[in-house]
Length: 189
Image (tube, rainbow, N blue to C red):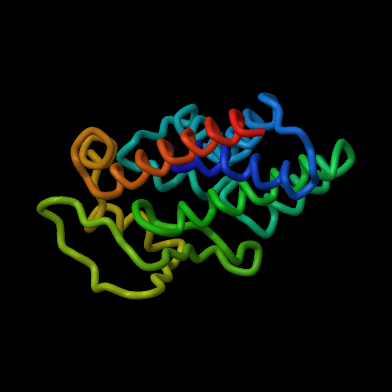
C-alpha cells in the first residue's frame, strides 16, 4: 500500500509536468486514489465472506489490465486527457507491483486466459515449502487455491507489514522518498 501511495504521488508530479499543469492537491490525491482503486475489489471479496487467508481471490475481479485500464481511460478521457493518463499510469504501476513479490500475481492476459503471472521475486513464508526461483511464474487459475494452501502465508499481513521484512521496508522507504520529492517539488517552484 505504501508503495502504491508513493507511486501515485510521483505519477501525479510526472503527469502534471508532462501536460505542463500546475500540480494541485486534488491531482495528487487523484494519483493516490488511482494507484489504490483497483484494490477496491478486496472489499468486495470481504463482503462475499472472504478473509486475509484467501485474499488471493480478490484479484479475480478487477485485476485484469486488458479490461480495467482501457475501460477506465475511456471513461475518464471524456473528462480530461491528463486525468486519463494519470489513471492509466497509476493503474499499470499497481498491476506491476502486484506482479512482483507477494501474492499470486494477476491475470495479465485475461480475457484470453485466466492464468495469473508473477515476475522475479516470490515471497516465501516461514515454515512453508519454497518455490523454485524463476523470472516468470505462470499460475493456472484452478491451481491458485492449492498453491496458496501449500506455499501461502495466512498471516501475510502480520509477517510482511508488521515485522521488519525487506518488502515492507522497500515499500515504506519508497513512500518516504516520494513524500520528500513532493515536498521539495512544491517548495522549489
